[in-house]
Image (cartoon, rainbow over all chains, first blue to last red; front, side):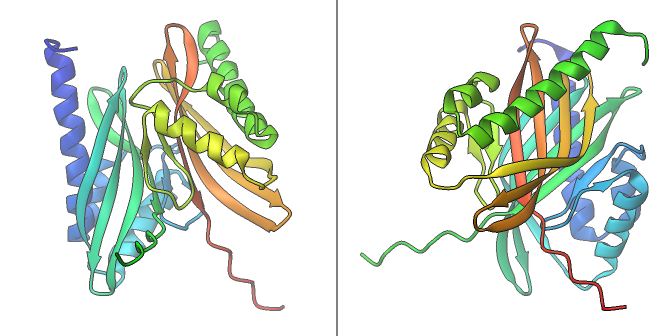
Length: 138
Length: 138
């Protein structure tokens, strides 16, 4: 759909929002994270291994608690794919985590909704990717 | 948005498609599953613990292999929430699995896209919910 300036802008806005999501996570900055999300009752967050959290009250509280903890994570995002429809976008990617306790990969789905002209995060789902079996020695 | 007949129809169509997804999974019916999905290069599937699969070729092959295996699963779907935008819908739910080897819960995100007037599955992401700690005895 080359040549649609509004759609090109939306692509950039959604990618920027997705980047800001991981920047706020790395920085453990609750206010920055909160500003990126819709605060509606229908937002959803599924942290790796967690049950489904519904509504900003529960989702925001989860970020507050996670950021209050000791973990210091660096996210290296790879394998990113953006899908975009009319006012709804979703990105799938690998979160490659580097932390003091080791490394690991989380496969993530992030959904973004254009609400009154502004893109917001409405859904985050992360799931641990099982460690690959080592190849047999040559 | 009560009173919009087309939107009411879309809600029903997406819920029916989601139900058919689990029915085809239980029945291990590849042709039924394949008919529900878009066969585009941008569809995405993240099975529990798996890396991201992209494109119908890889996604379809994963279903073919899963259905060829010995597992017989019954899905009891609970905690379902439908979000719907213009031509894009996403459902989050708990897949409560009953199998010969035990029980477990998968938190799932399913995304649906209206393509040339017909809703199709374009994304499935399932992640295991860690077993709840037992409550202390009263």
